[in-house]
Structure formats: C-alpha cells, structure tokens
Image (cartoon, rainbow, N blue to C red; front, side, top):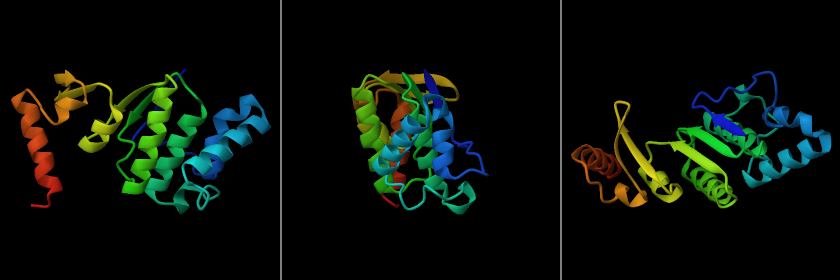
Length: 165
C-alpha cells in the first residue's frame, strides 16, 4: 500500500529498465504486468530507452524508471524523495502531470523537494523544515508569502539563485 522512491533509485543493474518496472508486477500475471508497463512507458515517454540497462542511460532516465516502477504498483501512498533532482524541465512537467492525476485518484503523496515551483504546483499542503524541525506549514501559498523569517530567507535565496545573479 506504500511505495517509496528514494533519491538513490535502487534499480537492478542486470535488468533493463522495462524489466525493473515489471519486476514487482509479476504477481499480477504476465499480461497485466506487460500492459501496465507499456502504458507507463508511453505515459512517461520512455520508449527510446526502456530496453536499456541502468548503466546505459542518464541519471534522469533512471529516475523516470524508478518512478514508473512506483506508479506501476498503484499504491495508496507514494513517498517520493527528490524525484526531480536529475530531470530536465520537460520531464519535470510530465511527472507533475502524473502526480496530479494520481492525487485526483485519491493516492496520498508525500514529496520531498527543494524545487519551490514544483512544490507550489504539486502540493496541497506544505511543510517547511529546517534541521529536522517543522518551521512553517500551510497551503502552497506559504511558498510565495512565508510567515517565518527562516522561510523568508530560504525563499529569498532560491529566488536569487534562479535569477542567475
């Protein structure tokens, strides 16, 4: 019922990305596993690299495969740690769309990210943490209108870094 995608990904190196995605689905039968994997490969635009091994693709492509494996299990809850760290902007948008669809289907998603824009567009509730402690909570609006000085400082730094100064 709970599926986790860690920042380290944990893909089997001797299996293709397709096989990695299909592995936990074997218990549902070959046809269901194949249909689910093919659908995810299409939805996540993986056709060009799904049949390669993890060491033959980019980190971002491995990240997409790890997400596809998590999505394939259709869990009640997804725990996602920095899942966009190696993705280009187009894949970030693809993942954002998929997460919003899953949320609309009632799947609970706990997402750890440092990408403020991604958090703003994907979160229904935001918890800002500093040194393991919750500093501020609220809806996505706290990312544009923070209340605490610590969060204001963080948002200011993020804005500064994104302006390229």
